[in-house]
Image 1 (cartoon, rainbow, N blue to C red):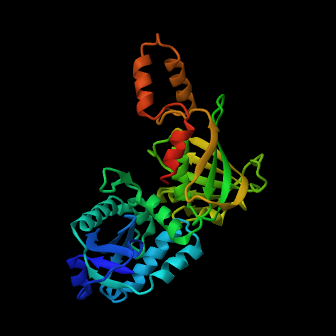
Image 2 (cartoon, rainbow, N blue to C red):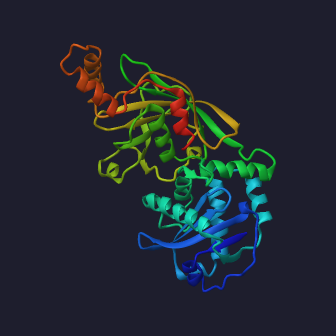
Image 3 (cartoon, helix red, strand yellow):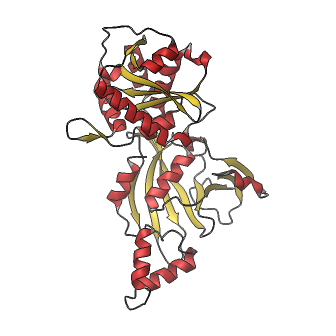
Length: 367
């Protein structure tokens, strides 16, 4: 594995770069040292795919074992994407020894700098308790970038394509669940049927539901599990037994059941064993979604979720709950109403529109 370093990184490593080194682009990375949140950070950008890997909060002692840490961070990134273990092993068997040289040319340095910019966009995703930060690198790799030939590419999709070519076989074999998610809205039928890989986290599921229903992520949310919610049907008289919260403020109020922060909790910790839960979004308007696990898929072949089908429009953000939504609908159904044009425009700004399967799946491919 070839690591092509900026002068700043070489100085930090107290290393003289070797010369005349070459490696296949899939196993070559450009690397830079920068400071984010007052912590030393190394950003790696793959020469072939432009995929980004992040090492964060490095201390002096860590630079003495940087070979090991870089390999670990790349491995974590591949695992975060859901790539098969045997493909990851083959990648590292091919690229065994880490060697260092200086940066190749201005084009690669420019691409490296762009990767560093995208990592800084997601500085709030960096976990100062861990050196390897695959989530931040994954998000940085979802930006559309120029391929230098009047075209554009997504680095994470390039990584998948070239790893599959290298492996000579499909690189994904994931366990997933099929979910039916229904928004509880009296007088209206609004639901989505989704397939979600189980290696994803509950914060990921929140983002997936935001896209599937067209919410704009303005408000807090929580997931709640119920006693008896293991049959695939909603309990008749649901008694909450566990809430996964997104914000520490949720713990300020007394609760008679277990509460946990949702951070980093994978879906596989609770699904498919528990087959019913709710997702509540916006505690003011109180939009409650019932989630049923319909089936388990043992060999899902994509790293991203998909929406299979759905029905119904989602209310606009901040419409005022069910009562406000009915008032909104009555106005936009009557062109003679004096507030018709204003409400129509406001609804569009708040994300109100027809459910479009293709648009939802376009968004989900990037989650």
